[in-house]
Image (cartoon, rainbow, N blue to C red; front, top):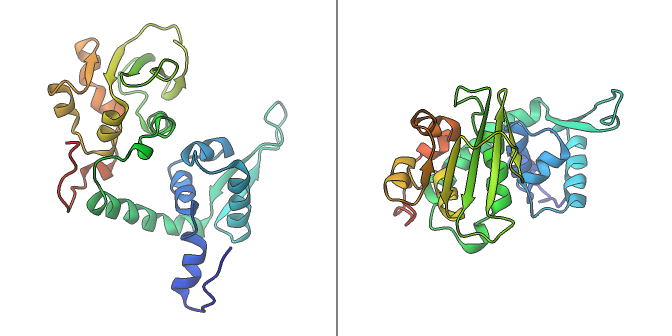
Length: 237
């Protein structure tokens, strides 16, 4: 870890939390990720080696704690990661960074920011799986601008848990969503309101009326989507 060589508490905190990737790791732990694989999905450009090193560093500094499973079976030897009191105290600052980013840095997406894997992970982690009032409900999402193999995905909502599927899970499709990858990111980010996306034809929604009406509840868009931009609005909306 690089240091500023200062005794100033701002410098000491920045040495820990302003290092590349660390705020995103804290973000995902605060959002409920606990497994190494879950954290890695939130930072797809970070190598597993660097992630492992960073987790060990944060553990040594008392920001996170590693809890071995210790139980029998195939999961034995695996571990979960959790924020300590010191780590949790930093979460409001992460949230404030998000508010600032929504207010001051929003603009049209650059090509390298249109990340399919991160969007899928965000949806799987954040949707409200019981929004449709059914024990099992399947949402099929087609990204109309993506190549075969990356075009169609299924979200299996079962017993309050959502699972991303690369193949049809075989329960029948309750709701179909069709749009470009960028437009779905704009919707999730709050730049393109859901109603406007549907009325303008940028988002195609097909399903029973009751299921369609529950789409907003299923997407479960976070509070950051309600933060308006201070600069000129992005062209997405």
